[in-house]
Image (cartoon, rainbow, N blue to C red):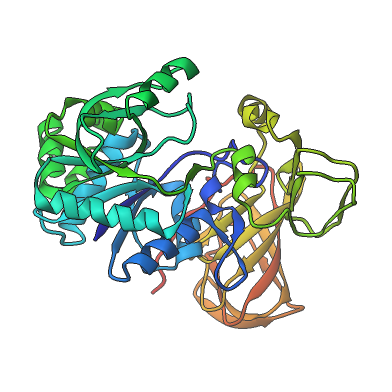
Length: 437
């Protein structure tokens, strides 16, 4: 099956473990099959491949998330990058044309679209596979998945089917209601709209051509900023008359907040954490190399990272976004395709960063105009290239990189480096990338 996974959003709702670069789907809060912690995107990708080892998965995302996806899923995963954020319809349209032109998917093949961040069991992806089969059958232009509601939620839109059959034509859609209206919708057999649907690829490519004049993927990519910001629901779903819905009665949780996330975490503590015997219903996640002691905590979530510390009542944690936006500040942790970095000290004319490189990976060959750098190798072996000259480095070596020098480092083993950036104007924009001959 062909699947487009939508991976968007910022890092406000799971602060301080997530940030503007490291969105919630990249935080490693679940136990994987091997006992190690895995992220939402790793869990979802593993589940899809368990259900269908031959599934062709393409992740539609922004350019700020590409490095984290490569870091967690490897270099072989298919990624369609939005050059700008333009809402869900432009993102899906670009991904559809990417499937056609870059991945070679036929216009008569079915494609399923799913968000990357629900917490579900494998039966959910069995249902996604069934959606694709229904799209292949051609009984409707668009097939949606409707989640059987477990309570009258005010957070989701509702799909009202014509019949109570497992697959039914759609009678109407309802916007997010208040609780009383939600109860009324559910009494009429309404389903939650989870933003999961399937179609034949040619169907969506045709719609994209009607909305914007383009000639293939590269042309659409270059014209992407001219596309109207509009959701898939408004652009396609609400205008489509040939539409059906398939019921899904399995477990499904939207884990967009700490309150919901703690309901599905497999353990109450991650990292160096100690809870006394009087703590109740408290979850603590600690990413730092220091100890956290909690005593008498009830119904709380505590999260500790380089970006900050959250101490919150679980219910109140759902309302944290405006406060996080006030805090602001620089991003102090990010995953890259080659590893990760952590900002450990910031001074007026210096940044100190801990860099971890994975074996066999390297930074891009680049230079900085306004800053010098000093690298201290604290663990591992590798090779540095400075202005075309290569030499080996090991733990204890110090490398000095003057401004405007072209440089990179290649990890032979896992490399840990302390990088000190020195200058009056230190910015992420001060970087020129070169190709290595």
